[in-house]
Image (cartoon, rainbow, N blue to C red; front, side, top):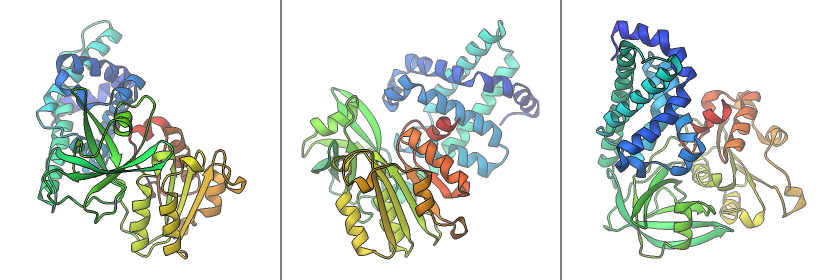
Length: 398
């Protein structure tokens, strides 16, 4: 924890550091990968190329600096990264490696801006702040690792699973059913949570996160994946993975779980963003809640789980309202997009305290976040999951 003198130095230099934080984090990752190539496999290279990962790290550090005096706010800031780290088996020994490279990047970038080396006392103060952040994250991750390992069917780290079935759901979307190679029980993931799936491709491990689409009491996990033309892992799953092949899986984790209330639930998705939604819908309906599900797809051929959605509507006709919009093709009456006018038709009044969950491409999520806020949906009732770099929606809105 920083000393009082260091706290003063941090306060005095926070605006200056924040101004150059994205440049600092962009410098940090090449340093980390050059010095410690063993950690490269933990990161999605697409997020590095796009700049999403450096921006996400910069935003989390900045938000932590602002929130750190309030433990509840600080924990909320780091929670998405904690869940992602647990899914990737990040360990305490990784934090000093990151800290050394991050503080070296701070020194390099700010030294270039100032035209002289960064003051040593300022550098030490920011190192103390990083150590405080690292200690908070390590503690949160340790507690989560322990809870997962102690749960029925749970484990810590990565566990070998094998492909037992594949189902093509729509054009370019397939579901992969995965059972543990050891034949043991599996942890019942909460609807809306995700797994880290590690595929070994040509001798290199590649981790990716995919939502669970299996029922909570299933004997195996189901993930549903869209094939991306440039996606290393999605192409491997679609084109090369065969029945009996092995993938390594983390335990289910993630924050996009159903809240404890009894008010109406609004689910909003686009494209493959629908993967967490059916589980959330089933859970909410089982608790007697009303559910509106708005989904946007390219066309009927790219609309996965249409039959499952229709079956739910048949089971719960009074409480489940599915609404689909296609950007092209299909019934002309269903042509369109999820916009403010559609929300106005189906969004319960804010007095009903609706809980809204939304997942989809970055631009879609930023737009839904804005539309819900404009319609008076409270911030704590606007919930999303981001499968890019952590803090991704905040970066899109910023």
